[in-house]
Length: 142
Image 1 (cartoon, rainbow, N blue to C red):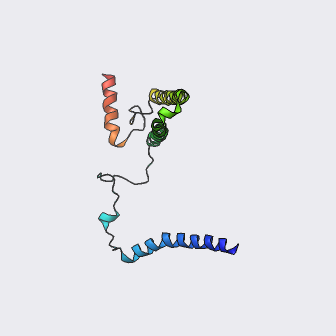
Image 2: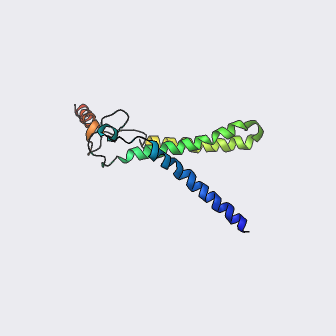
Image 3: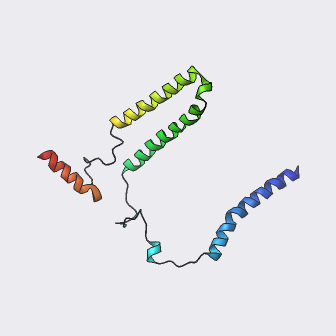
């Protein structure tokens, strides 16, 4: 009985060692030379502008969630396609219903224009897209 607890204790110990050993080795061997260039925020080759404590538009999160939902659901198509010949007509009908639900969801999101990355009719539009907002308003007004 105590042998089982010893195995668990050994596995917990090895888990701790395998997590902290690389961190300690890195701390001992890695060069530590912080400077302004290394501590600067790097964002896809773009120069940072302003503070990092800005509020992001909820659109980024909505688009990411919509992508994840459709991406994960499409993953269900691959196992079904592999065994399609063995499943028969019932599985074909079920997958048709599944795809119909996916298409309805996509049409709903598209109709609500939640797939548009930038909406120009935002009152608080500032920053990089503020000029586009002003241009679109002048074009609509002319």
